[in-house]
Image: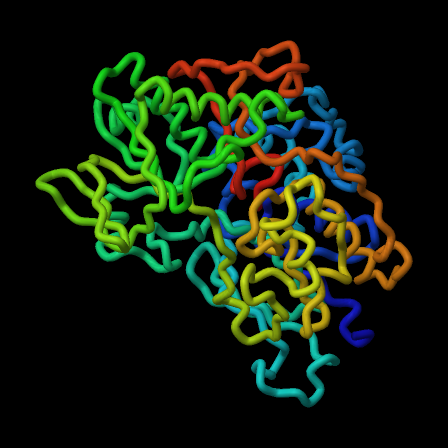
Length: 458
């Protein structure tokens, strides 16, 4: 689109991948415009600020971003330390956004992306037209911006999967979530108000993975000081030897310790597991709630339900552009086979870039956690490699766009969920995992995007 080369490239989302994209574009002499609906960098990351990552600072800072920051006098934190989400946002993402200056717009909510003057049906002249980005500003005004390309790094954290096992909310779920009886985040049990919500009460935890492990371990720690605190762990599948992760064999000790802590919560009687339970309905039992499965089984009454069944991308504002998405994962069709969770962990995903992230709509890219669709175990390092390649492609540097500049460790450095003390001398990569008891002051962490982790979205 040579006639629109003077136009900016819009980046949606001022999270880790979106800001890295802006840094790479800036380094290529391309004008970025980051549109962020929040008021600070890493708005989604801040929502799980109490969560500690598995990844160290060495894996959480993008090279182009560090170069931009160095000019401001910024110094990278200890590369061996695993920060919390709040530390990542305060000590890296916000300084990076500040360095980008007016190339970041706050309070800008994107409501639509389209080819200028053409809906998704029209073929004529499509590839030569710039994009029109529709947005609502912080004061509620509608605005349209003409841009040469779009990098959507808005993440998936705002759209968690529902409780219903068929992918839709279970009967009664919507109303109860509005009342706060059903939530979709790892609770911060260091917060007095949140702790009081769960102390001495029964909580259903639905889902598997590090998010569920963190919550189970946290509730078990709460039970040590507040008798009557109990968790009911609801799994859609059965429990196998791999359910709790690698344990002592995990080459990431913090991740292995998390699985061991979740298992201990059950072994010590602080949680009960219900397997093969696919929820269709939530019913009232007096002031309490119970879950009903498709086979008619019912859980015991609980006071609160925490749903941790993964995340999904919001594609509503992309309805007028042509996307090429895998029918199962909602990820780009050429990327999907590389990230299929049935075949890959984060450490076995081949580094990829503009070619795998392209769509029928030229000049449009989904990057970061959003590019993974419904697949988990996204890495920040993977996202940084994605936007490096995309920026090179937009600059016309085909050789750099196709080149792989990232080698992932075989075991991966997935997400957060370290059950270790913040001041541990060994950081999060100590030589041997141990079961670490959670107290109320401990900051546990969780693997998402992402939910959170060395991997989260924006």
